[in-house]
Image 1 (cartoon, rainbow, N blue to C red):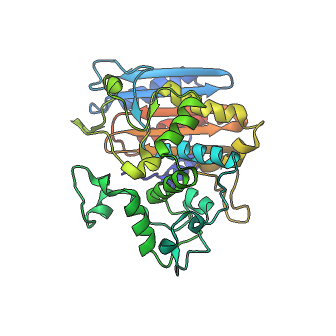
Image 2: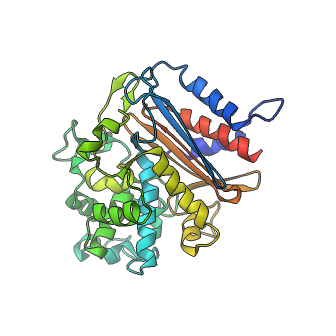
Image 3: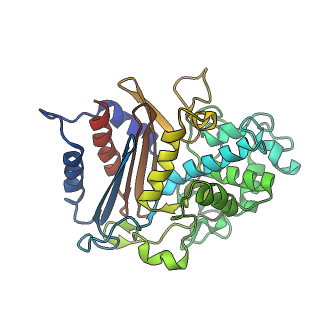
Length: 359
């Protein structure tokens, strides 16, 4: 449900071109994207943000409930889905700066002894492996993987994700067959959330508030939307059907963030502004496995196009899609948010904007 499509996006990015006789303006690119988007009568709202150096542009289209009532704007809250993982990585990095945790720690260091005792992964899986999806931990990418679990409720499927479930799942693991290979795991981010709570004796929600809401000033970014903000929510849609906001409980670090476009752009701009000056920012976007094939940063996906490093992440829930991108070398940041469940539409839109700035 909230599984990222790294391979498909990379394939699209490598092959994508805009066939045009002359260079377009960014407004023309945006107009082309929105025309294409709303050719599908089921699509409701769309927000696009672009950072170009010191300039930040915002584009809002359609509605929170129906596209004809054009009420999507700077206060509209969208589900970000798996982009949440970038915020979780930020919290982890801040704790690492404070030297209360380290990416090189073994996972077992932060677990009760009865969970890892006698397990073959005891001295193998590090926290950096979990964050980079190379730990071999199970994915739990859809509710189908949860149906056999005692207490499963199809009306609230992720309610089974409490601390006991996370620990019991780890306890039942013995051999990790695909350790060292990128294999996307939502469960892994639930584990990272658990570890951060344990080392700080602080709920993940409070860590999020301290390092995201307060430190970065993202005052319209939430793990759980307060009641007074409900009227600002872009209602998720699957086709024309309204679907509920996703509830992830202790899997929250993997996909619970709801945010406005200005706040998302502020998050991206922090990374662009500090990329050349902060070792800690660059450490997130740097390769964690320099001897392996390809670049594997903390949390982000990456591809090199026209000799330029491009970092990205995709998010999808029951009825929302989102995508973000950083091009530090060009000081470009891009975010596209939608309240419809789409297949690959946002990836295609992003590629048109990336092509405009990199060709």
